[in-house]
Image (cartoon, rainbow, N blue to C red; front, side):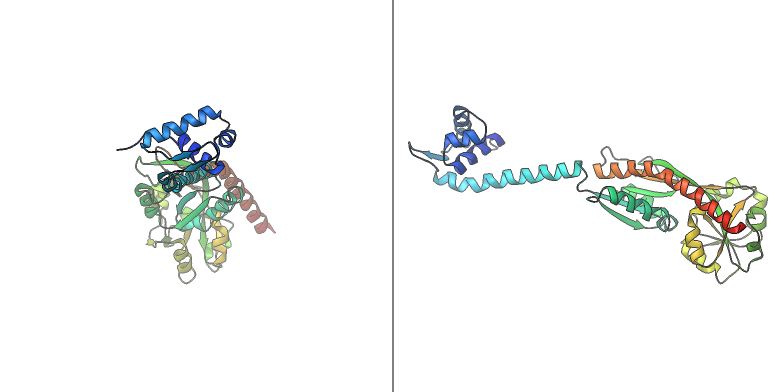
Length: 314
């Protein structure tokens, strides 16, 4: 049968053992000696056995009390450790955030975001997974991912909160020997005859729905990853559509990267957060940090496009 023993009673008992004196223990606990004695009597009454042997000269544990003392210390030590861990989690000295995003964002925005967050929250462990968008959403739904990123047009169920964080214009990657590479931009109409090496899920809904049907590419070549599409483009005719933020990635493959116009279509990027009744402090802080940080991406995109235009005019 459970006994109604309080932590205060246990602390009083151990204080008396450590001080070997009721008066010294009372001082240490900022109690009157009568109050301390009352706590010890209550404890012994609850457990039904004498824990302390008292004489006019000394206080010592009884045989049962000597066996009970290390058990009581373990209980209080475990509680103190649990409370310290809770404080660390609350104050973000510790914590875990599990983040996932598809390759395009993994190669561009996410490293910068995670590095910035770790700079201000070094005690929080951010574990990043580079996976297709379907796995990002699956992880959010099964609880293995806390925060995901991807195109806003991917519609999750109501177990996931959606936060718009950025809208980046789409550009076209082409081979440097392609006739399209001679211009300063390329239109959707001009792309119509070129095979589109496509890694984007739901491109019909997320992208082509914003383009007149008469300008849709005649041929789509499906692949799973942007790196695969860009690698293929180096050795075959075609075009790859990417958000402008992917410029360093595209140029790393030795390809030309041109603004895609008439119309300009923006790739809307969203943050997906697991819709839990109570997110951990670390997950909440990463979510809030991202929402505050995301305007930097838009500003960086504007500046990147200005640099590109200056480079073309030079």
